[in-house]
Length: 131
Image (cartoon, rainbow, N blue to C red):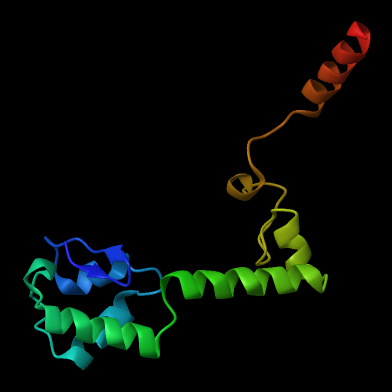
């Protein structure tokens, strides 16, 4: 398993698909990297030479934001939106959909499991009765 920028990429897959295991590298960027380095697209990742791995690493570090740097940048962007109290920042803070999706139905992934109002009321009444 070759290691690129601290991430083990699968050796039994083609380089084109193995590079996608890096956060921030998708299909188009993977092909672009392969063409810049001059690697055969059908080559398996385990067959990469140390020179080729070094060339891929150099391209990723110089030209692209990937892995930790990209994650930090995205987190900082979200934090900035929350601090300036813009609509998107408020939606992020409340863990609601940010990009205009409806929330009356179909927002379960973002909102979490359904909580019935009556169940909450019953719990608080039971708690108050015990006290």
